[in-house]
Length: 148
Image (cartoon, rainbow, N blue to C red; front, top):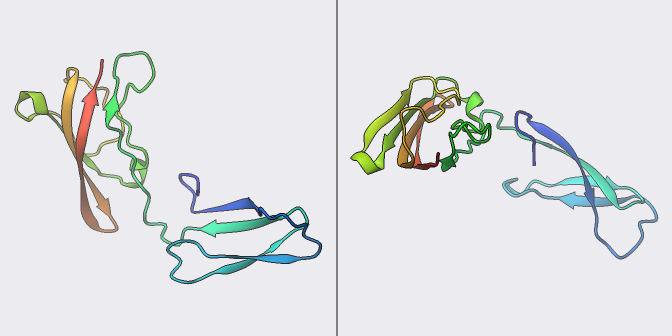
C-alpha cells in the first residue's frame, strides 16, 4: 500500500519458500492492473526482495467518506472528516436530514473537513459530495448517521 500523500513506496517482500537461497535468485512480480507487465527483482540470501511501487496516475486519490460521526465534544470523531479530500479543492458538500423530509442542514461550497454537526440533531442524513476529478465533476452520494 502506498501511504496517503505519496506516489511511491519501497517495500520489503519476504519470500515464503522451504528452501534456502544460496545465490542470487529472482522474483517475477506482476501487480493486478499491470496489463501483463511484470518486473523481475533480485532476492537476497535472507529470502527478501525489495521492490519500489510507483503510482503513475498521480491525479487519482481515493476518498474515504465516513458513514457515521459523533459530534459530542469528546475530541474523538467530532468532525465530519473525508480522508483524501485535500486533493480535491473546491469540493461542495450538502447534507440533508432524511427524518425531516430531506431538509438541508449543511452546505459548503469549499468543504474543508470542518463541519462539527452544528445544525443537526442525532439521526439519519444523506450527503452529496461534488468534486472536480481530472477536470470532470464527480458526485458521491451516501447515508450518514449522526450520534451525539
